[in-house]
Image (cartoon, rainbow, N blue to C red; front, side, top):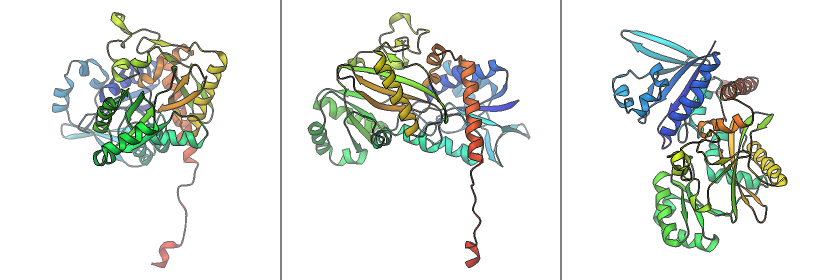
Length: 387
C-alpha cells in the first residue's frame, strides 16, 4: 500500500482555503478508496511542519483548537535520503515514515507557485499536479498572459507594475493606465489566487485605492481592461500528454459582482442567499455545463486546452476565460494550477467521482515521475581533471 502525504496549510494568504481542500477533497476520498495510507502534513502559518492523524479532522481547525495543538505538538522533521522521510519524536524514540507520493493541497505562495514542487523534485518522489516551471508560470498572471500572447491566444489589454514602480511614481503609473486602458478595469496582485486583493475600478479614485490594496499583497501588480458584455467561464483539465477536459462552467455572477474571495467562498456566495451551498457547485451559483452556443462552447474548450499545453501544465489545472457575448471573442484570463476543492463538483458532473478523481491524479503523478526518471540527469566529463 503506497503512502501518500497530503501537504496543506502554509505561509500563504490562502492558508484556510488550503485546509478545506486538503481535508474534504483529498484526504477523505483517498481514505475512502482504501488503496493508500494517507499521512497529513500541515504547515502552520509560521512555516512549522506537523504530522498527526488528528489533522485529518476539520473540526480541529474550525473550533480554533489548532493553535493549542501546534503549541503542544512536536514539529515533524523532513529528511532527504534518496526520497522523502518524515521524522517524528515519540518520547526518546524517533519514528520514521517514508513517503511514496506527495499530494500538494497548498494554495498560493510557497505551495502552488512552484516552491513546494522544487522541494519534491529534489526529494525525487512523484507528486500530484504541475511541475516547477508550469506552476510558477500559472501563478504569475503577467507571465501567463505573456506566454499566451506568444502562442497567439487572445488576452484582454493589460499593464503591469512593480510595487517599487508605484511607490516611486504613482501619478505617472496612473496616467499610463488611464491613457492605455479603458474603465472599468481590474487591479490584481500578480501571484495570488482565490481572488485575494483583486479590485474593480470604475474611476481614477478607485484605481488609486485598488493599486494600494494590490501592492499590500504582492510586489508585482497587473491592471487589466474589463471585457465588455462579459461571460466568465472556467474549464478544469486533467492529464499529462493526453488531456481530459471536464465541463465548461459558468459562474452565475453579474459584472459588478466579480468573482472575488467573498463571492467564491463565503456564505454560499453573494447570490447564494440563505440557501447556502448547492450540490451543483462549490458556491451554489455555477452553471454546469455552461449554456452557450455550441460553437462558442467548443471554441472556449479548445482555447482552454491550448493554454494548458502552452504553459506546460500536468496533472491538473483550471483555465479561466472571458467571453464577449456580443463579439463572440474569447480571452484567456488566468490559470489555477491547484483549483480549490479540485473542482470536484465539476468532475462529478462530467462523470468522475471524487474518489476516482484523486486516484487518477495519483496515477498521473506516477506516470509523470516515471517519464522524468528516464531522462539523463548526469553527464560524464574530464572537466575536473584540469584543476
